[in-house]
Image (cartoon, rainbow, N blue to C red; front, side, top):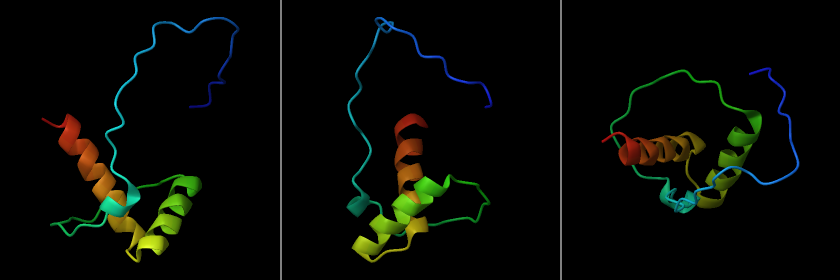
Length: 77
């Protein structure tokens, strides 16, 4: 991922809008059966989830897990 993005003037090819299906942070704190994995995340993503988790008094890992579960449920079928 070291390729540099080159921006150009003019119209973008065909654009397709999709409905925002991701849940708000408040809904990312449910208890489920889990397994442990190791994953490297961007600092900005982790900081975002830590801030949101603090607002809702839940562990940030639980919010990340819930987000991934929503994504997998949506596209895993």
